[in-house]
Image (cartoon, rainbow, N blue to C red; front, side, top):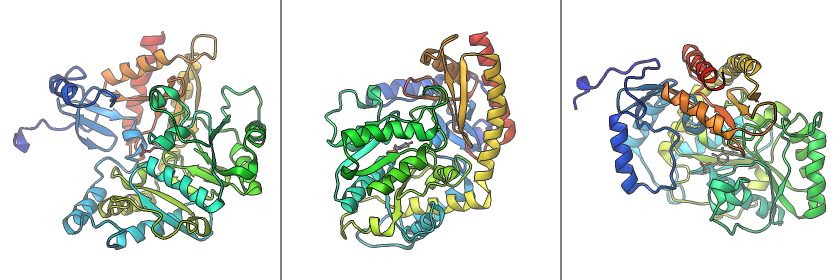
Length: 448
Ligand SMILES: *Cc1c(COP(=O)(O)O)cnc(C)c1O
């Protein structure tokens, strides 16, 4: 097919076939004979291109994207500056393996991470390929630096899908089911979940509830690390009550354990700051990043206090693809876009729009029990009438109805009942507003 024969791509929501259209249906059939069924897809349409805030499918439909590929394309999908950096880098050097022969872009990214992550202390970083791999390395660092083995994670946590990180991840089905046993010496403590905690429970009280269990069952002197998402993502976009994170961080400091912030989803401007830890002035010992760091290319990192990071012996870190030069070039271009475009400010603006519109919707429909989040990381918890019982079925029906009208809205949550809003930080206001109009129509249609 020549370029001119392709349908012109709309720069607004535009649905010209059923979702999925005929070409997507053909791809679904091909997929069923070759792609493992354990790989799911929220959207039934197949995507061939993107523009700011939009996905263009193979049937000529254009959808508004409220998911950003799980919070990855914050600077835009196929952002021209990222694409140019990728092209330039790929035409010069695609790979050497930093362990075999080093290159400058790796050092540049580590310098940016030292500047941008919380705290003015001396820092070191290691670059890896995926979020789960970075979390695994954070645990290795914590064990090497403390000489201890116990690792602590929270209820509702999500840290990845490798064996160690599945052990840290809280939710059984579908993530953990059939995949055990998991690595030993991982311990789970209650999170702060304001909507479901006892009325009026403060962050300090929620932290004490967690830490008392930890002192009793594990013993502070045995804990290498407490691994925390400053805003829990997959678990339901849960913002802990104020005081929860600082109290955990203080406990870590008092007990010689590392406070590890998993900022894979909440980092890089998503919550209206470079990192979500900043909202409570928490300075983590280690910060784990991935997702939005490189505008869609696979890259992750652990950044931490120099003396902790350097507890790992030379050669103790590695991986063939970690810190790939093309991914590093994309990260440098993405970070520049975040800085020059004040995307943290954009995230706060998007958050305000979402809170106003979703708040009004929640006032009309009791099923929308709570609107919560920080910046452009916003969730809506869906419950059954006159109760706090999760309604995953209604959440899925709302998401499906939005999809049929050309809005990709994902769900999340331990109970599967949270609508999750993770728009690109360059999403034009008019698109966001149109997506929220669609959601409103769907709520009226499904809830009445
Ligand atoms: C996505 C995510 C991970 C896992 O990252 P992958 O790149 O999928 O391995 C870990 N922690 C959090 C908070 C995440 O959102």
